[in-house]
Length: 354
Image (tube, rainbow, N blue to C red; front, side, top):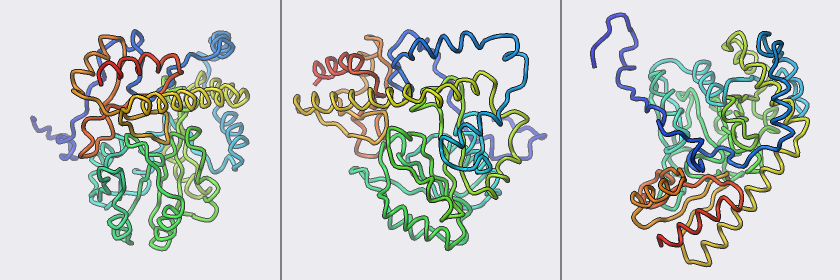
């Protein structure tokens, strides 16, 4: 790579970012990115169509209104909320707030891809806590790594791509040791809703705790890019110093507000995904096909001739991703969960392959 004398952060040249897929994804059953693939109710789409007007396009968004409605839903003060264009931006802001070049941070491996990207962008030393082939974390290494020299810990719960969670008692021990050593802990709850338990209620007890969430998963608004962080008012005030002039746009605000007021749309989506997961498990067990259950809206299935089967799926209009990304589990594919009827097509193809 050619050096640019204007750039002082020379380490950036070593970061490789993948380009977006060139495939026209609207023509496929999109089981590759853990998005909502079940169609929205017409009342939501019709509401948005009515709201696409001159005022909402030409005026700046009223984000404080959205924040107040969200705070009421979460039962926390609006002073504890930082809204961002996707939870990845909330995570990025935590990197900006808590770290400086060469600092140590603790992360999971594998985990949400942007965590590694931000670690490299901010030139940090990462302590990676890995999984074995039973999807068990190396907690011995994790606890040993916690010290006053660590600037940040990021734990996705549930984690992606593994779909695993950290036991509540273990998480409490992590939070307690981190608080004692003054280490900020980010718990990424992107799959909130699909996994029912949240650590938001522990923010008052642990002043080092930040929870990040997205509207992309259970809310199904991946295309609109919105997320948020919840923390104690002092940290939240600092996070908000990094925000752009307007964090999200008017149509995103209107969408969030509508879904909070009509939350049954979200709960119905969560229930449908849960039913399709139950159906998948029953069918796979019946046909003696190995799978890995998760606490999120995706599923891992062991596939013979994985690479050739990916081509079969694509030929049949289905996009998927590689599995947990853990050594020893290379023969698994990850399938986002849609409705039962959508997953029936998947099961039929899997049965033929196995």
